[in-house]
Image (cartoon, rainbow, N blue to C red; front, top):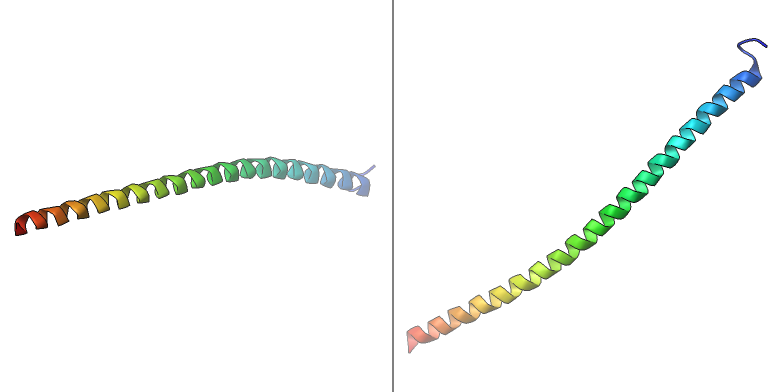
Length: 76
């Protein structure tokens, strides 16, 4: 069998392809984990933002109420 034997070339190329596929499986798994983690982080940030918006609205309402009372006291 010579170095350029088609069956040897085929085997070599097949091994390269198998190795590359194994690498792609690992990368795909890592990307799935990263994606899941990022989605969880995004969900947490969305919830945190909603909570902060609600707190901000409550504070704004209280400040507006205080301003209204202060103006009423000034006019008395």
